[in-house]
Length: 147
Image 1 (cartoon, one colour):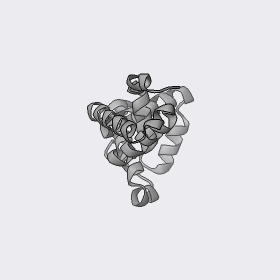
Image 2 (cartoon, helix red, strand yellow):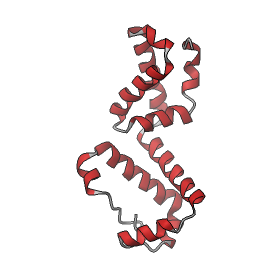
Image 3 (cartoon, one colour):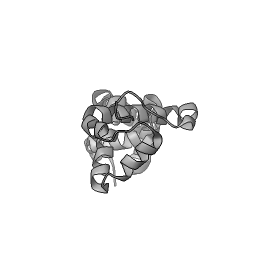
Image 4 (cartoon, one colour):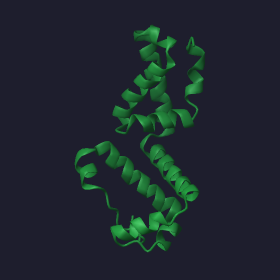
């Protein structure tokens, strides 16, 4: 992201070959624009080398916080909470009905749900898992597992 907040550079391979990653990157960078505009403007970023210099100058704890916030923003934009909750509910009970033995293994059940919903929302499985976990959606289903 440039300091004037008008230019965004995305790796050409990501742009051409990884649509889900590309979508997440765009949403992530928009999150930085909305939440961190003052920091980006202060970086005076015009070229890739400026970006690298700027990023190297941010202390690790602050950098991690900024990235966490932008990742959370992207996840919320691409996977809205209400529809995620509805889709998790639908998939959970559909899988439970088709394969009741999966209730014995929550990891397998959540892996299936992550996979199905990642495809639906065109994001990675880790984005779905993070949203389901961070939004505490999983806790609603603990009563169904035999573990």
